[in-house]
Image (cartoon, rainbow, N blue to C red; front, side):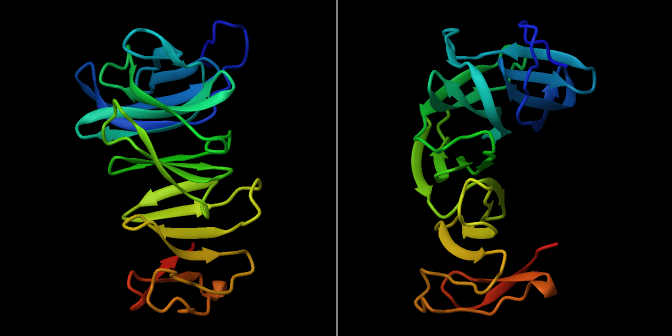
Length: 239
């Protein structure tokens, strides 16, 4: 239980973990947004290191209610990307976790409508944040954490996101009409594959052969994906 000082449920809505040094010991720091903004917990000791709004270096609240979080490193600095509410709008803050008892936002950016909701998951890879909202996946460049910038939107993605080895995976939630697994190349953010529930085909639109289509059979539990340049395919185990 995380005390909100309001006699109410803390409503922690997301969770991320980053391995870092705390008090001289390697620690999996738990980072969770909620009603008060942000909470940082040492699970090895049970200590709540911080709970409160997301503050900047002047102790001004940049987020009053936290919704979504990702944690990792930008360079050698441990950070949390916290998405949440400020008034009626939505904002993403890049929070320095170097001192987990006094986290501070290094920079923040207001987000377009539909970029965040309670279902959003945030991915962080190579200085880019990926936010799966109801209006697509919003890309935010956080390579310079003091000046995060909205870099664009992948309209065909959204909902739950995962980032791994040059691929962006999107599994739409019920707010969007298109459901199923979609996979994008982060190298060019090229649309590689859409796998609807009924399943039919795989297309790589930026290939010279735009109509390169390969039949897809879920019963073999693999998903063929056209490679960059349209010269072949690989298979992903759909589990």
